[in-house]
Image (cartoon, rainbow, N blue to C red; front, side, top):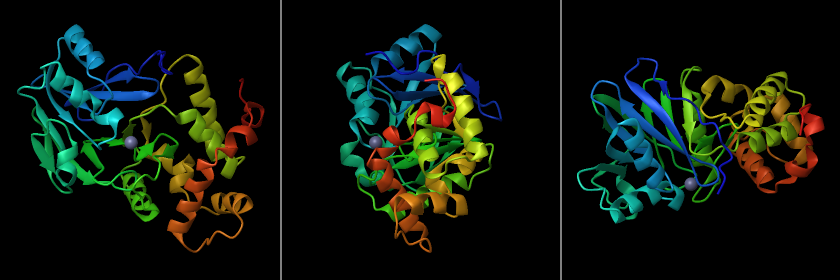
Length: 292
Ligand SMILES: [Zn+2]
């Protein structure tokens, strides 16, 4: 299967330099994150559909895999656990997931919850409970980086599987409440479809147009538009812009009758509208002012 990203992000560091982050494309559009402590060399993989590309990458780069952090229990996030176990490579690994869904995290060695901390070598991160996509969904914060699984996916958000909308709305608002420079490491490259939808509900936004131009240029070269920043998401992601008059007007044009006094209703209507996929036909590349 040819991944949508053919030129992954080169390794980059957290602002404090204590973690080096590697991006490993997997399946069609999953992004596996491998975070390495620059002091100890310990490497921890955050989610993934499969283990082989991670093991191959670690071997090629001389990285010692010491653990797994799971944001949630969908197969394309815990597949890496299952395969590590099957290959006999899970022994001695620290496998961390949500305590509240402990029975669904293969090989779990440590259950965590909101307010706990996690380690990558000598580096300590914070655990947030960010539900809405799935019950027990966690995000992990390290310095200026947040690994948020399928909660905020560049330019958009995850599906409401367990829901309800109020939980995902809250989780997203919490993420975009971080410093604007915070980099958001979501688990999929869906940015172009997400921004096409953003244009459907907020056409003509200059910040959105600028992001579209950047992202289309990058993706045309096979590059990856993830991570994005909190600042970019605040300016252009329709799922965190329910308070913005232009977004409200655009949404009401598509979904008459939505209660604009209720932030959760706005979020829920936005999510439901995207689920119809109308934007894929309604917003052309010409509308976006980009080459197809
Ligand atoms: Zn998921």
